[in-house]
Length: 533
Ligand SMILES: *[C@@H]1O[C@H](CO)[C@@H](O)[C@H](O)[C@H]1NC(C)=O
Ligand SMILES: *[C@@H]1O[C@H](CO)[C@@H](O)[C@H](O)[C@H]1NC(C)=O
Ligand SMILES: *[C@@H]1O[C@H](CO)[C@@H](O)[C@H](O)[C@H]1NC(C)=O
Ligand SMILES: *[C@@H]1O[C@H](CO)[C@@H](O)[C@H](O)[C@H]1NC(C)=O
Ligand SMILES: *[C@@H]1O[C@H](CO)[C@@H](O)[C@H](O)[C@H]1NC(C)=O
Ligand SMILES: *[C@@H]1O[C@H](CO)[C@@H](O)[C@H](O)[C@H]1NC(C)=O
Ligand SMILES: *[C@@H]1O[C@H](CO)[C@@H](O)[C@H](O)[C@H]1NC(C)=O
Ligand SMILES: *[C@@H]1O[C@H](CO)[C@@H](O)[C@H](O)[C@H]1NC(C)=O
Image (cartoon, rainbow, N blue to C red; front, side, top):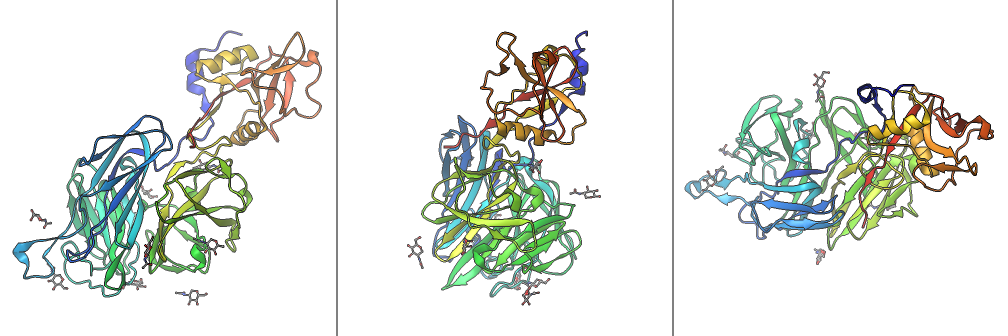
């Protein structure tokens, strides 16, 4: 057989491995600290940005600059202290006579850039009031967000211009961030339209009207939207902040399993294209073509739908506080969860009644990676500050489950279209910078079989043959030939063939074959994994 023209092979090659999907990792972030409490508040804000690198030799810069760029290795976390008073309202002295216009509304942001992918968490604190937020990289922001219904807060007033009268007594507010050039044109749509223009790198704050008409935020470019209140929790003359990042609007109906946070029932604020309202969480699953946020008077937590479950998360430990993970997974996939290098053990699983999902919680004492060997799940990071809790979904590093760890670049499993002999197949894979697959472990055999399910090929060449001297089978990558997956009554004797194909049906058993026959090659490249420290 003549060698296949390389161009054809390239064009026809069908990549089977899951491609890299949505993650919260990136190289450019715009962070805002949401305090916006009146000038008379006795305490200063102490804000921090936690940064974790996914790769070695990552350089991270904060601007406006507070220090030299910081160098980080994979899995290492640092925090930047944001001394700049981003949120505290200044007094506009010219207008002290009008109590409601004396405030100067903050529009400042901080930018974090890095040379390689990082994940970020922002923690805002003022006295006993602490809140965290997941920060989405600027490249992954959206131009449409649904506005949730507004919880009632003590002493809230809603008079005046929603853009000007943004005091600590106003209802919940939207904080909209335009991460970069050019200027953003944003419209809040609902009963009435509010147009806003936001300069590059700046934020706008608008309080939200609570009418039954569906509201959403629409922009002419990607922006970030937060839902926030600087004084939602009032006790002993102090203010408690509530703050959550809104997820981008979606079109399809999604299912949000609700773990029993702290064993209490919660109200869910739901919003999509047609409805905006509250649902009762007596059912541990809500369906929405939009967003769902858990609300208790002291907690605001964005829920993650099953459709956006992922396989690896970075959890950035917040010092001097109790840090708890809440993990939600399908009941058939309780096995395989790891916290750092160790399997999750002794987890008391709780069924989410009437759903296929279960949840558990687990305390941690340092920054860690949470990953699943074979399935997707979700992880919430909850932190206790005295008697109150705050938290957010943990940032997603990957949605490609792998038995070896937390995947940065997924493995490649590719069946080439052009059939050839076993020897030719080795070359065809090499032409793609891949290798004819070696399958030395049971875990890899199972993962490969699962990834190839539904493929139209029936049998493919794999990278094993037997020695003509000893008759022993060996792998092309020289790994030990111990875990085998021969089909029933295989392999036969040497005369039946010295190479092997893998069936793509059933358990993907192997059969010996004459090396000169034609079959399509199964090519492979190893994944790149996050180094867990
Ligand atoms: C805030 O105060 C500064 C300095 O007084 C002023 O230049 C700026 O226009 C004010 N911004 C707003 C939104 O009032
Ligand atoms: C907003 O409206 C919902 C009903 O749509 C209601 O339950 C809630 O109390 C309202 N919030 C405020 C602050 O009035
Ligand atoms: C702000 O709200 C107060 C109280 O509702 C109102 O008296 C005042 O006129 C408003 N100011 C502006 C600039 O809208
Ligand atoms: C939602 O669906 C409509 C029509 O099906 C489509 O035009 C629109 O782009 C979709 N929006 C999003 C955010 O996917
Ligand atoms: C963790 O689980 C236990 C037992 O189900 C429960 O009592 C506790 O409140 C949970 N903690 C959190 C933070 O959800
Ligand atoms: C939520 O469910 C509980 C228990 O089923 C019920 O007592 C309560 O009235 C419900 N609340 C709403 C707003 O439907
Ligand atoms: C995990 O989620 C990703 C992204 O939604 C999906 O592509 C992948 O197939 C899922 N993996 C498993 C094993 O469910
Ligand atoms: C809150 O917790 C801190 C330690 O995290 C402690 O020093 C402080 O006394 C506590 N405050 C109250 C009011 O419980």
